[in-house]
Image 1 (cartoon, rainbow, N blue to C red):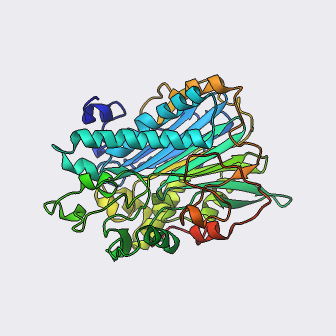
Image 2 (image 1 turned 90 degrees about the vertical axis):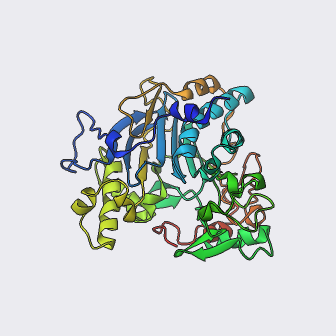
Length: 445
């Protein structure tokens, strides 16, 4: 296996302020005005298989921990947002490997499905843990590197969304006949601030009074981390990667007997309809300041070019107001200092203009946040499956929102890797609604 840092560098180097780049698309017209935020990157408008997309990233940490990609082709679109914590390494690894794994497994199995997506995420997790095994003895802090993972795939008229952590995907659905817009939050946040999530954790480890602790104004697993599902975070998944008292922030005195963080995603599948107008995918830095409904209304009411940037600006304006500052004052701050007021934020808005694809003009490209140029995409191999099975199966939609554990879901979803086929008329939304308490609300603990 290649050395860890060599593997990471194949994606790209950690972004410090001196590497920050702002990209404005030629021909982009909107009323956002001149952009002078040195920590903001954006692709105001681009083409994907089913229409247009808009993409923006703003940095707050000394080193950007959000990694992201939009991969487009004639018949499919892949979006990935990887919100790292403890460093950028796990997020960079996911960015470099998840789509490769997905394409390879799909080709091997001759189909695309939620099971294929789950298996690709599991393989990515296992690949990162193998790196931790190789590096742990000489670099123990590799064990604290982790990342949330939010991915969306549009393929053959079907939307698949998978999530670990507290990023969020929201579908903008047109309400006929008044042409209003409503927010359908597709993902559950795996965060200990949710009472349902805390109860699920405690049910798995009864008697562990230190499993979830309120510390530093938030509920945290083992008093350390807020997210409850992730890729990486080996020190909270395997006992052999526990850190000693010389690392007090990450030391668990009582140790762990097994994984206290999960690495299995929730997966949502849906056949797209004409009422499904756009998808907003964003890291939790956006949702800390904007509700889902406000976000979809902004997208619905404003021009497409620059809409992701507009959402970022709205979140920064809210963050500034909460601190008694102005947006211009926030922009003047450097990386690191800005983290006191907002997190790294990544936003991708995917417009759904044609359900069956064909809108990317035959191009197969990968666009990564803070990259100066487009690159080749591993999505290309998936086109060999153009005649394969419908990933949505016979039903119109299904959810894997088992935030309270597999047994709690009234839909019968499971975290196991098996197809989700659910009758959309069967109802059973109570537990899912509880898991997404305050659906569409700005994320707070």
